[in-house]
Amino acid sequence: MVNLQLQHRAFRAHYKLGWHDAVPDRKSVQLWVANFRATGSALKRKPPGRPRSARTPDSVQAVRLSVTQSPTRSARKHASALGLSDRTVRRILHTDMQFHPYKLMIAQKLHESDLEDSMSCCTDVLQNVPVNDVLLTTDEAHFHLSGCVNKQNFRYWAENNPRHERPLPSERVTAWCAVSTLGV
Image (tube, rainbow, N blue to C red; front, top):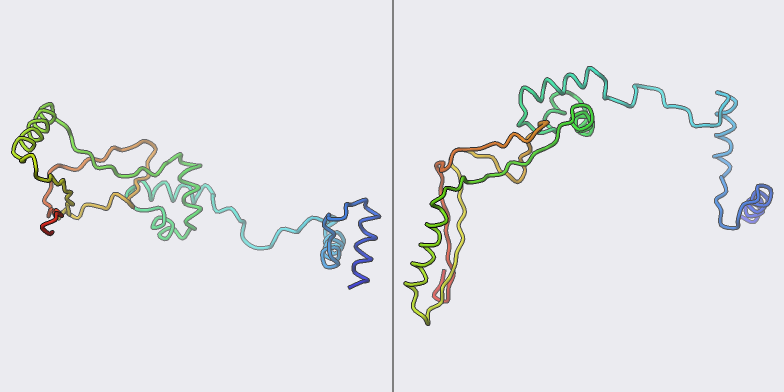
């Protein structure tokens, strides 16, 4: 241990390093020397095997064909079907194809009479509730029977936002609940 500290101190003094600067260990220096003798460079050798980049023109074309056939399928499923990594498919979609994942947004078309209907409904409720009573507002949830996708985890890959629309109203089951001092 003392010998190692003396070697580090001598190394720092020879190369004019500060007291807290890192000093390479013996194995690192031996690796550098071996690399230099083998390749003429002390830099790390490239590992043998397949090239690290999977973004070849063939894979870009395969992803392009797969996405145009089924744009609603997730990037993970495209990657699995093509035998590529999920990250590679996402890089191809973003970088090479300039695609973006658009989130499905459900919007109801508003009509001119909707504002008048809402205002008249609110006025009717306020007129029918006695002064000393408590007015409760509630919420409801719709479960679509058509197998409509969950908009929270659905992404549509495209160059431009496709603005998907589904017909309203669709067949659905509505759950409604109200809570008051009388019970649920």
